[in-house]
Amino acid sequence: MPHLRLALNQIDSCVGDLARNAETILHWTRHAAGQGAHLVAFPEMALTGYPVEDLALRPSFVEASRAALRTLAGRLAEEGLGGLPVIVGYLDRGAQATPQYGRPAGAPQNAAAVLYGGGVALSFAKHHLPNYGVFDEFRYFVPGDTLPVVRVHGVDVALAICEDLWQDGGRVPAARSAGAGLLLSVNASPYERDKDDTRLELVRRRAREAGCTTAYLAMIGGQDELVFDGDSIVVDKEGGVIARAPQFAEGCVLVDLDLPAAAPAPPSGILDDGLRVTHVTLSPDPLPSSPPGPPGDRAERLPDLEEIYTALVVGLRGYVTKNGFRSVVLGLSGGIDSALVATLACDALGPGQVHAVAMPSRYSSEHSLTDAAELARRTGLSFRTVPIGPMFDAYMAALPLTGLAEENLQSRLRGTTLMAISNQEGHLVLAPGNKSELACGYSTLYGDSVGGYGPIKDVYKSVVYQLARWRNQAAADRGQTPPIPEHTLSKPPSAELRPGQVDTDSLPDYAVLDRILELYVDRDHGREEIVAQGFDDGLVTRVLRMVDHAEYKRRQYPPGAKISAKGFGKDRRLPITNHWREGG
Image (tube, one colour):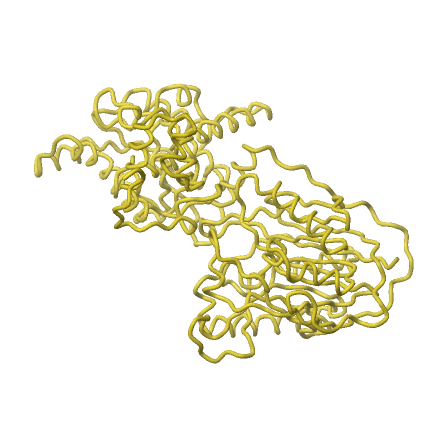
């Protein structure tokens, strides 16, 4: 059987930074070559970053991507790597780019190319275009209509891009018809909770359908609201796992594969779903036999809470660093939300880059100040106190307010203070709101919603507590001081905007609330379906009304890492002006 050493490179690309992404590709290609790789692969749109969104509709960016690809091919050859096939995802355009109603202007394509010998040996575009959740690929791309196959050292390797595996038909059965020995899919698959299990079963099923060893390569890193977790997988034709890459880690996975020899005559013609085979032979003869290499690594999956926590850290780090910030600032109230956000920021950026501000008012409890100071001591972040009492008194003297307006004024003064510090010192403001509060509108516009990024925007309050306890336990297991004071975890949550206030004055108990919200927000269940699961009719109606009424607030909240099946962002789009109410 021919032998092939495959190098799968999980890299962190930045959208639009063609030069930096190309350097990353060069770096890891050099590494793979040094490890004796015969075929090197990089993720979907690795050269441009993903998702490029409306940049795909800008001809100048499309042409810059195409030019960067050609330059990259030349540089690989100049460095003596021209004889090593390298698969790179990039942004291309179709040959028929004439304007046509109902398709993207300029016919952009989500494409990949095989670089070899200083040029582009083969290029192809994604066949199946996703148009659900966070994906809008019908808006941006035109589909490909080929089955690309490249012969490397006597093995026919069929190529695919992400959704080509997630959808039935297309390139997977076509790979079987073409007699491919390996199906290699390059991907930019965003993270969401429990997706690693779904992904593994998908790759196993597709390998059996294709009748050949199947490799699934994914990227890592943070890009706006999306987090990419890697989790690249290689399985044999029966679905048995050969190798699995670590989650959230950049690096190269080397896999030694013994694969079926290609047929003497290259595949050709029209196959399943009308796909036309495009075949290129790079090296027709198998390599001389060699001792088997080491077995592929099978990295352990992270436990659920560690996986979520790591995703939040990666998302925060990516947003801050890729947008040119060096540090962050947040209000540290002594409550659980700001405590978790501060801890995430310290883990993502280092405590020296995290600035926290306590902003007490006349209603702030003593324990809030001491809890905030204790967290600062434990983590080593920069901490200061800026009382808002004098500002509040001056404002009330000029414009007397009562009730909710008086409460919200305190929050808005804190938001203004943080933005002033941000402008003066150059920090990015972090908003501490969680998904439960955002869902119900339990936040103050231009107050606690102020910020450039919301690290726990997609985390329900009950999970906030779980993550905080996990982080403390992880520290204790390592012999370190838990970062979050126990009193912060044990006291009732409160906004502290009036005497004796607690969250349950305005909201149901979070254990019940979050279950209702998950059904309504994440799963799109209606009121009757939720009530049928045993929840009180009046409570469900009340919660759903709060969610619907708060849409205008959520539209003005900053972006934050998506970790659920449906976050408040690109994958949940409801009209703000909307008179439909569940149950009439």
